[in-house]
Image (cartoon, rainbow, N blue to C red; front, side):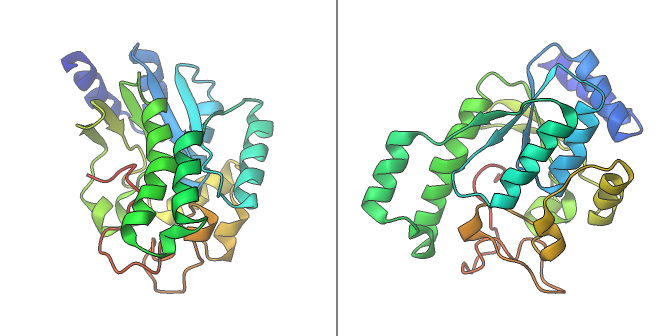
Length: 234
């Protein structure tokens, strides 16, 4: 654990995103995973990994069953561009069927507790399964995504999952990310051009208006300061 922590500090000292990820790939023998939801931040990291053929980093995604068609399209374009398949994890069938049977197809509009339960079944359970053997989890978190994420750091330790989180884009701005995508001709979700900045499941995501918070389009019916699905909540 101490050796891995020291190595991650050396990763931070590398200058570019590509250099950081390559150093991590070449220096860490433990299991490294990158989770993507095909948002613009994740596409930046995916390009940096796949364009360098960093084979020690496993890329995976969570298919909740409720994502936008545009997200599936971006997923397909990404696999075609880099000629690489992305591993997929799904919600547990029995628990999901029971949840829908008891609460209906869209119960997340009825209460925060039901929304969080839905997120837990569709996202958190499969994520925990994906990260079961991970020592390092790479994410697309950025400090300016929300007030809750503003206090996050490039290297963190996830106490619940007992692994290190590496957030290489923590200081990137939205403009930085889109400039990177355009310079490298990386496919991205067309919904981003329609005001959908933070994209999750289709029933729980709307476009935001000018001046609204980055994550205002997520669970917009809830009156909460911290709108998280449980994947990154502290």
